[in-house]
Image (cartoon, rainbow, N blue to C red; front, side):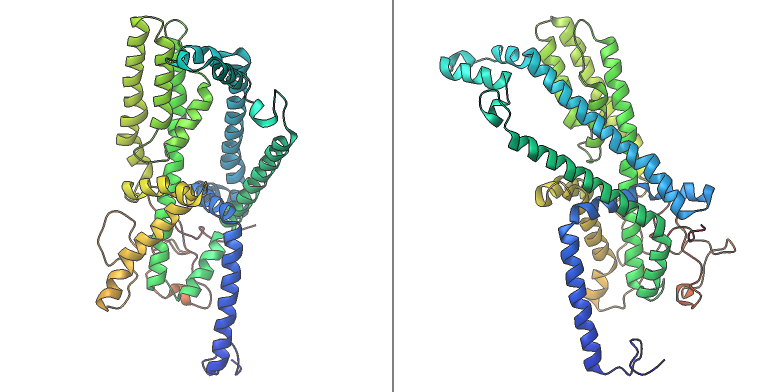
Length: 425
């Protein structure tokens, strides 16, 4: 190595200070860019961790990282986006149908206490309910400005989703190379920072992939439950928009403990309003439906389905507060960002903080024995080497030949920022 090279220990202190200043400036620029596109990046990271085990299973069959990543995006994420668009379209059509039929105005007439409103205000309220577009552009006319704003919002949303899918694809296709770079940057697999990153990586996969599976299962179960309700309902009792409500129930199930209550409780209330004028038989059916929804869409999934699909999951209460407080604190992307931040903080407390407080050397294993999260280092060190045997050399990642690539086990076992090998194509 020539004098003056970056890795040369003889580099003058002033030269090293200059490099550190440059790195700090570049880190600040990177943080500014990340902040400007935080929604896109967080959504892309969520897609990566939620689909990584699926991508690795596909990769075992076709033996190509890039093709496996592309098939994962096409087979998993794009259909999910299609269902979302379909649900939104059905919701808009249903709202338009309600307004066109004047059903809302009829319901308004049945609301107790409306007769106490002065006649002029009552007429204004009826007009507003029958034609909400008057809020946008005056008497029945549609102001073009909101329409343009809606188009811009739709275009921006599609652009955001497209870029997020690109981030997910790049992470899935190149996580093996990224892992090798991080191993060298961290100084090997037996360092504290490597163990910390390993535990964070495992917990993120456990939370996001487990929740994606659970949401998918809950969407199917909820759709079948709502369809069965319509099949058995007496008289004119009907659950509207079965597919949309089933999908929304699956999305709501991402929030621990809350699960599908955000959707099936309003559905029960809606059925109760329908049954109010149909006699005691219909009300009895609604009561049975409420009990069935509570068991099928709430108790049984949380008791049996979620623990099985989530595997070694992070503390339920931790994830609960992350999902609830995230959107309040950061906006829509906080639903994905705050769980990531909570896991980063949790593993820092478990792995690093006790050693710093007691002045002990930092280790790659957690200083606090807890079942709330994954053990630091328990995922990166279990990968088989090229001969199929476990890598017992802690400095394997420091060899000049790069050593064996780190393997990733699927959900129910682990998570790891590396793919099982490099791209073979």
